[in-house]
Length: 269
Image 1 (cartoon, rainbow, N blue to C red):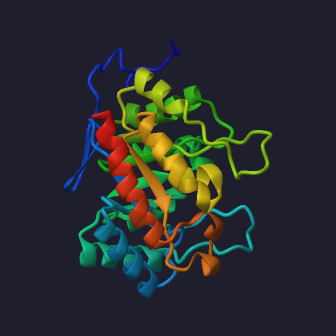
Image 2 (cartoon, rainbow, N blue to C red):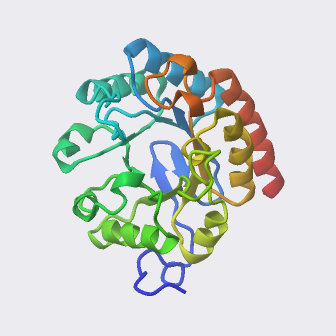
């Protein structure tokens, strides 16, 4: 169906790839729930959220230490200090961590991060992808907001052709003419990717919509469409979040979402 797609292709690798991160298996029929704040803001904030999502049923903690922002004047993250706080949250909760890497010079800071996230803006940063392909860490690869499914798979090929087969694809919405949502969440990409590729596919409805009230319904729709998991932004005080408060749900809303998500998953089994 798509030329020059080899290592990601289900034709080459007919069985679903399952990626193990600590005690969590991503893919293979498992429902992976990744949650946490857009940005690490303080020790109190990240620990409170991490403990809350762990009790609600999250498998993996997400949190941004380095934040690529559209405006250079917006909060750019706590950087190395943020990484230290994520590690502390892992020690407190046992949750593995996923965090975004924005440049090669930061790679040594991510030694204790369990999953390296490549954000939408870096999906075609090919030098970064090739270097991440030399690591042994799972890579969560987000689709660029103006990129096709073919281009997403080609970026995954860059990582895999350099030796790292632990790639998780992430649909996070694409840019269209619609202005009422931050992006247009392309859920048709989920079953299409599952047909073309053997790699796990998760969905990020927080960035896909940009609206907190839409996170739960789109999460459930993503699971119904066959995704291997969801990644949602959770904040204990969204109104005062330093980044992406409008698309962050509260810990209480997250608990309700997890209960519904499990019910949808059970229907599909």
